[in-house]
Amino acid sequence: MQGAQRRSGFIRVEDLLQRDVFDVDEDPHIIVPSDPEAQKDLPRKALVLLCPAQCYVETGDRIVFSYEGCLECGLCRVLGWGRIKWGYPPSGRGIQYRFT
Ligand code: SF4
Image (cartoon, rainbow, N blue to C red):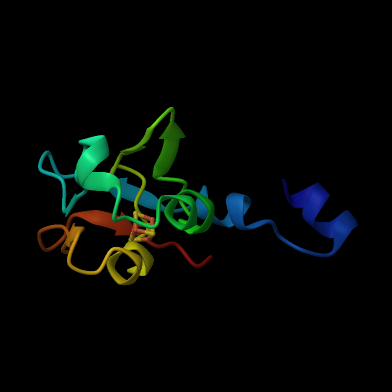
């Protein structure tokens, strides 16, 4: 990775995120309706395209959400306001960013 960084002169976001550590809680901190009817009011395309951790995946007539790789950026909280139950993981859990 470092050789590729030096040659290209930039660091990919995916490479930066690989340095982070996840302490995943057994209970999801974000609840997304799973029923296709309940998802009709969600901005599904935006969630799939804009979640930086790709936690939202489109499968047929609905989206599937997995919280394990969440970066806690809050974007889906805004996009799904009132329709997605959003919270941070319990203290000390979730993502631990590494900046070195
Ligand atoms: S908080 Fe951010 S990273 Fe986590 S699921 Fe929502 S959009 Fe994705």
